[in-house]
Image 1 (cartoon, rainbow over the protein chains, first blue to last red):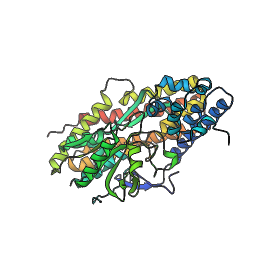
Image 2 (image 1 turned 60 degrees about the vertical axis):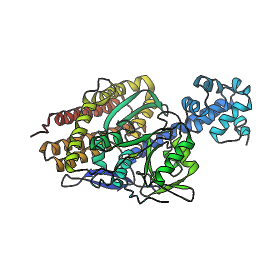
Image 3 (image 1 turned 60 degrees about the horizontal axis):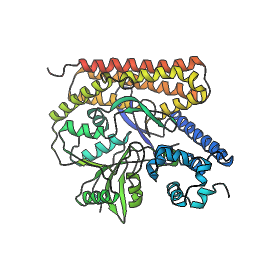
Length: 122
Length: 338
């Protein structure tokens, strides 16, 4: 996973029992833990997409998952309270939100307002 | 404008920033294991009430910022540390430092850190780097986990300095305020102080999820995860346990190996045979952390998922807890004055 990016320093004892540091390209076990974290993320994104298409959840949920965020991070960046953010994830509430509020989400997700409203239209 | 700054790569970001800033201030004897040990960096906590990436959060090292603070304090080096509410002010102060020839440590968020590969960019806000100059509107960056120096535009740097969420950096910057001549006697004193503080952090903080008791706490939780959460979620939790053994780092138990290296160096300053023996105990603890990670990988990859496999996983952690307990108790018993 680190290949082509950087190598990392690690410490190990040599034959004489003395600690030295060296460079490695990472450890397979850790890479697989990272892979699993990404599998989980992709799964959550897919589930969120289905909920939005099914009319249950709003695009805020989908983009939150896509950007690896959670309600507390959305709240910190947008200035909304967490309970507001959670409401905004309901399709019914989202529909009634003014553009002024939606724009905050669009800015955070780095997308146009249009894309926030119609994320899967392409 | 560029400050002459030597970039030395390290296993962990705050160790590296501390080491490189202190070396810049003239302390040529400092290196990563010494900074980590003097700063009492070794730790364990299962962080209560916090979920990261929908799984519990663990840390294997002390709170962000503490390694730099404790290392400087123990060595008698005065520190400047500032947080900001205004990004403009934060940039102004940074520029003023650079004008004055002072490289500066900054706490940043990783998610918007453009030179990191996407796979590593989570919303983790306790990364550290050094800004050591400015050229054509870009800032020159020494990020200690990278092999070489890099750069960020002014806007990119602002964004990572003002990342939001848990552990938000608030533009935080820090640096050693003045050059101080560090004698070997001062280093000896700082080493003893660091070891004592680390011993007390791991053995004597009266909270169940911290230190040695914290490792056991997690082990006991693991015993219940399979039934409570199901194999899938329990696997994701275990993956997080492995992933957090370091952010970008050496893999299982890396901090334990750095501490082992520290104790060997400590022996160079304070020739007590016990230090070498205890160093070996930390190597052993690091090895068992590694074995635990391998076991965890077996579980989260779905290769071994029986109840017995979770018990074995917990047993690794109980074994680590016992090893580290014995090691710290041995450190506690050392008589430094004689």
